[in-house]
Length: 516
Image 1: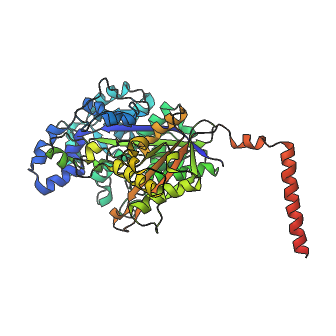
Image 2: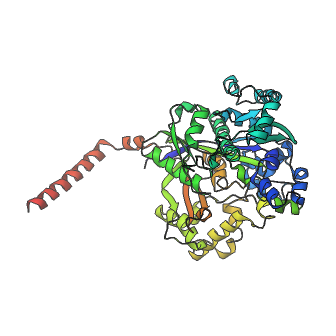
Image 3: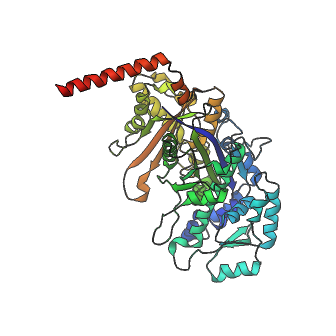
């Protein structure tokens, strides 16, 4: 079968602590409940510095500098175990500072709705000039700044949202329409963050894999954000906006939405488009969700912890035609949670894991690693959500016991051998299997593994339109190195004669039957 391959990947984190205080859903809700709460009073003292965010162990795993297996060598909690000599640039991506990311927001701002103070713009330019991804052409899009007086006027009289650094106003976000509730400054800010973080991640992928943006034929964006106006609330299109932003001049695109499961849906869709010959190169990209910043901060502060949800995450995966080298996407082994599957753990695991494996004649242990919802337990445990990956691995192992493929004694150690502790930021769509693709591609290319299963699950009931749960999966496999056309060339002339003879015999038999 003519499979598609993963040509490259990119992962980014933008550290934005000041957004939590001034521009987050968390702080706005907290102020509505009690604007003098202890949580708000202690918030600023619990925010991490950029250096602390870079040194955070799960962040280093996310950008590819540390192997996820290493996490088991460290006892929880991890926030008090900084990585020595940590680098903000990793094998698969980077961790960006707040000032730099605000510069990317402005570069992504086509309608000039973000106003930044002149001196602050100069400061950002100096920072981005040192960044390897930002050339003169990109920096030209970071326009001259405005006066502080003009910015204050927009805040006080035009319902603009202030942008503050350390409590001081450095800019503002204007509303995108005078009356439209879906184009307020707050909603536009969330959407421009998704676009900008998607662009940043795509730039990382292209640069690190030495791929030209012009090679991309199609873009699928699969975050949880919804762009539109009052008449079409989720009309989109983030994908084409990102394509334009990164200079993918030959690309079209569309958005895929399915809550946390959307990225896995998008990769299956992209591989199908490549496999069918519709497009040669499809970029799957997801910007981050600023609405998830500090989502569990109340519980973290109660436990004397820093605010760990202080980053906007992004990922990008480029899917292309089989090159005989990169890992193939086994589209014939895709799993899906159907309408009739049901929501019991056994039914879910069966539909997503064992059913697709059976199609390929594979057992549970034929998969080297399972990448499930890679939620960071450093964040989820204090918030009362437990250890999400470990719970998933126990369910997989339990089903394996029932099927006679796993010894009951292996249930407790299954996650250690076939999975990982989680490291992904709690940004909804980001954790579902996707953070492991970069590590998996490297391991397969280095012949350390043969097969990996990526699993995405989603809570569709959050929209109050259905009680349905959702889930999809696919298998990454080592490339045999033999291209499809080469397999065809292997047929000898004698083989071809035999095939033709069989076809002619069948045709003659059918003709005789019709005559009778």
